[in-house]
Image 1 (cartoon, helix red, strand yellow):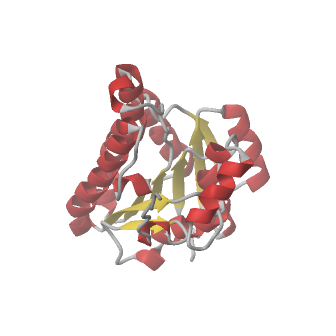
Image 2: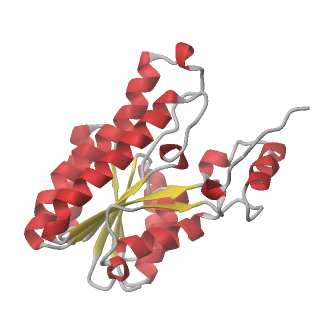
Length: 252
């Protein structure tokens, strides 16, 4: 993979898959703009990456904030060649009758509406240049189902729909759009999970382990690179085989 002369913008870049992807793209010669809400964390991580990394504090769930950040990224580092929309929230966990309006609206705004706002803002310049790659972090929940988190499930199905719509519209103009669906990855989302539950999670994965952010980042970088020049409208799981299993519970 080669990113020399390319500018990649990554949201949700202060940790986990987003940060690992920024580190990898920079190591492959690219310029990266890291976007997240925590400016102090971004400043530290960007300094560790080196002069190829820039950062902008912005809230992906706020339309003005995220679109302004995109404009600032272009002003600082030039046209956006790759856009990795990785920011997201898991929302609340509750049965559907107990799921609140506020929780549903928040998760849909951050995980779905934000994608629409950002892509709508960036896409015209990409299509005009006839070059660009967009990648969205989805979820296995968009391919299967989930109990007790209707907001997250709905938002990730929406993300998949947005990606496919954009891919079909942009394909004739040289722009690609794909989705990466992480499985159990060792990100801050799992930081507070008890070790006993982590072992259960790993046990459900055919590879019998939880993945690393770096493993997901390598797939993300591939989809953002010219090595994936004929890949668009695809949803790719990075899950150690979890999506390929049929879990049947037998109760005696």
